Amino acid sequence: MIQQADIPDIKNITDCEAETLCTRLRASLIDSVSKTGGHLASNLGAVEITVALHRVFDFTRDRLVFDVGHQCYTHKILTGRADKMSSLRTFGGMSGFPKPAESCCDAFIAGHASNSVSVATGMARGRTLLGDNYYVIALIGDGALTGGLAYEGLSDAGNSGERMLVILNDNGMSITKNVGGIAEHLARQRLKPQYLRFKKGYRKVTGTIPGGKTLYRITHRIKKAVKETLLPCSFFEDMGFTYLGPVDGHDVKGLTSLLRYAKDIEGPVLLHVRTVKGNGYTPAERNPDRFHGVGRFCVQTGEPLSAGSPNFSAAFGGTLCELAEKDSRICAITAAMRDGTGLGEFFCRFPSRSFDVGIAEGHATAMAAGMAKQGMVPVFAVYSTFLQRGYDMLIHDVAIQGLHVVFAVDRAGLVGEDGETHHGVFDVAFLDTVPGMTVLCPASFSELKTMLAYAIQEVQGPVALRYPRGGEGAYTADSGTGPAVLLRQGSDVTLVGYGVMINEVLRCAELLQQQGISADVVKLNTITPIDIHTIQNSLSKTGRLLVAEDVMDANCVGRRIAAELALAGSPAANVALCNLGRSFVTHGSVAELRKLCGLDGESLCRKAMEVCTRG
Ligand SMILES: Cc1ncc(C[n+]2csc(CCOP(=O)(O)OP(=O)(O)O)c2C)c(N)n1
Ligand SMILES: CC(=O)[C@@H](O)[C@H](O)COP(=O)(O)O
Ligand SMILES: [Mg+2]
Image 1 (spheres, rainbow, N blue to C red):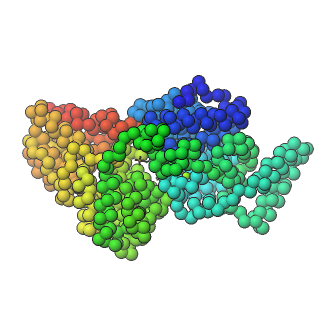
Image 2: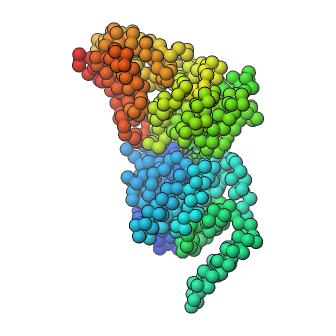
Image 3: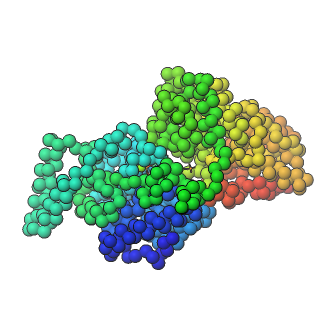
């Protein structure tokens, strides 16, 4: 594994030394990620472009904005964090995404796709307005370019006249193979090497002769006028960019010289590089989708070191196939997360009813509304954190007309190693704001199957099922589709939970029992709307309430219960709301993060005992 001491002074290495450095970095990434897990294929594809960027720019001043940011490992190694790679994505260790708190060379956080051009445009405008002159770069992948936000950024940036560079890292892949018209367009782009060489040579010559700069500007304007009238422009040139490429994204020498050339061009520039996702590691080149996000693996074979275990995504995908077998109205939608959401089998068995729209959650939601309006039953499988991108379409296109769209909200709650940008901790709050919304919370695979059928066949209007990353806990029962059930009976305190957090609540009840305190455990199957009667009945006995949930405090279930009780004139004497509060939660294992946030069984037990001793 490459150590900090091994990193050369990158501004002063030769092209040959740069190539050697890329080889060493690549080997180190493979070795390191095989031990920690993380995003491998994307990082292997971005080694040369990152080294070339660091040869030409100084990222203590110049700003490099990563899109998604999962491809930032080489950047982190080159900016003083080589020795931290062994702590990648661990609690208290280095994040797998750019983090300004980690280094001044990390210009901006990242995690959600398609925002980098917008952020970079803002930075460039800020720079200009403040009279500074550092350079601003956005590094965006072809997958991220299927997100509509990217076009908003490109349209404005291209017209901004700002000196900035957008590097399009085009490997033909999103997590799976890239989709959509833009992917086709990029595939048609052809390199004009002789034209590119001429442009660079001409600029070099005019840069050395007296009056050459003026001559260059005049001929540049003539060329632009000729191209715009006589020759087809690339999509990006139409947007206002000087378009360079596509060029080989693994030629560190060529990239370095092209970046030096691009750096001096007035106005916005788009450099289109072609790379191979997983480059330099055969198993990843052969399976870039499988090596997009990996657990620990054997370097020699590429095989995972731990066998996969049953998870909610697979239970969802299998159940949806069973239902779709009998109901031809059911169709499945994903926003570039087909395998992550468990839809692989559905796409194989029902291709005509399967839609991967690219990284376009807003479009997916609006499209689902259109499908529902025409009589289909669209099931949009989406990670909770990415559904945030579709919130307006959920209100405007789905809910106002009361359309029956089913949202399979995966990765709900704390997700673990991806950290702040990926925890699914806002959906409980924002879904509840939507009139007519139903939100179901399966706590076991069996409940997910029951609730998915119920959501598709019985519920009217928009309905969401929310379930976590990974598998079920000790609770594996199926409490049906009633809004709430009493899982345990006691007289001292009422404990309320939903989803897989019920496992921590049941653990808490066990621990209280050992202290001679008996608890009612109310499990909510539906959290929007809430069945307050079951809770009221329990509280009439206990008078004390603790609600546990791994979501943000704002508009959480606990707050809504407390408010409903107060409005009904039956407020609990003592209430403890155990949730994530109003701060973002870092990365680490889910178990570590629950403990950090006081949401593990032991912490809940201590909280419940406080409530009981308060009176
Ligand atoms: C809004 C949003 N939706 C989905 C994702 C999940 N996601 C992470 S990386 C990725 C594919 C990115 O493809 P690309 O930009 O081409 O980068 P590559 O991995 O090919 O280098 C997706 C869909 C995300 N990060 N953000
Ligand atoms: C970078 C990104 O957004 C995805 O790769 C995400 O990390 C996938 O998360 P899961 O590992 O939970 O599928
Ligand atoms: Mg890609």
